[in-house]
Image 1 (cartoon, rainbow, N blue to C red):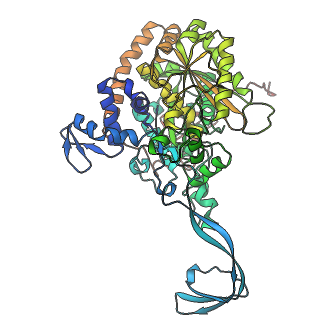
Image 2 (cartoon, helix red, strand yellow; image 1 turned 180 degrees about the vertical axis):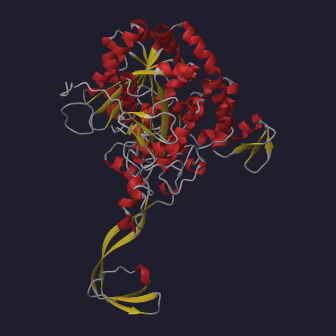
Image 3 (cartoon, rainbow, N blue to C red; image 1 turned 120 degrees about the horizontal axis):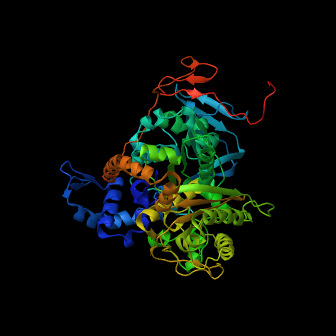
Length: 626
């Protein structure tokens, strides 16, 4: 796994550890805070394995943590938006107006700033080679007046302050979501401890797939955001904005610049359930035998004025006025913004966020052969729509089906007692009044049907916000952290469970809970009726199932091979914790266009790929050539 969100880096469970920080041992707390300080460029390691602050002053680890602890805590997770446009500066905008000119208006303008087509009544006189004088007759004149609009939403789950994923490779004005994709996939490969080229050489190139995208494309200025407002903003569209804005572009970037994959590719969009939609594609491909390795992920960067305004206009976001009304406040402080997201409590809307999350899936035989780390297993992801609806954004019935199927699969694989006593829920938990009622009702009904009386609920959006299509990726990364460390994150903004939440069979906690889990249910409820639930098994449960399938000898051999993988992974994580990130980005390397291929009726040989692509395809339809 790899990626980044408001809590930090995904590899090494850093982001997860930030959400259970108070429950960790002192040494783990120090490691987490040191890694975040390095990531935020507050400190850097010295050559003699000590530390120094940004000004070069030497510090030991304990002193560095003491100095920067509060800054790290204040500038990770949900907080006041740090983009100055959302604060005193205001958001640049224009207001339509009609000027009533009582007398002719004369002004000077640079030649290149004057529109090509002018009203017939305007008179233009040349002053010199660069400047013109324009006279506009009296009357009405339609204009756009520039202004600064105060932000109505000022909280978001932003990447840790000071961290910019585009710094680690030649980004060339890439949209933020694509830079986050490069970082997330690189972090995933680094954490895996596997050499991608060696893994690729073992396989038919068509045994590999990449399913990655996002929920709404790249809508910042280097992507479709800048393209769509280019005319009204007076800026020129660039040749990159149109292609780089597509929602499947994270997959395209990974194929072209990170993995060099020629296998299956694509992106499934399902609003807030997009990560699970892509995960389902990967799981189904491997279960069917079509692929052996699949990289799955999403990267969303929606913290822009326009996207935030769109969600605010829907009434979906926790804006300043709603937060003030919720707590009867006249002014909001930084502390108030940090607790803007309140799943299953009295709340007023979700908090938007950015995140990039990637996982590497393998079939079990290949995982054992390569000595891969096994962080968990995903035996199934279920997707169902809502059916008839009054409003396209309103919840419906599909989530009862997806969670019901996921629990049924878990019962079949682990047994009913294990599900009742050793499973937990990772709720979508958006912090909207509608979600707290409808999702808790889904949980309650499925719990009752399966005789579950005390089902722990985690709602990680309380820490990292709602990263749109990447939200379930945040949940999955957190669940894998819980399997590794034994703690379920609490819901620190849950002062009290709201009275309309169906909580009789559910366990909510403000503090982290110690919990020995065999399974987790990742739940997503997306706009438009895009419901999905994924079943995730713990490493321990996965190993027990693998032992039944492959035998103890095969598992012992895997553990021996895994030692080298773990050592490489630990080296990567140690360097990453010290702020040394290496983005994998191979622009213009190994480019092939077709004439270089060797093609026969049964296979295609590709230069640079150890094995050919087999053209022996399955035909389940019968043949007329009998």
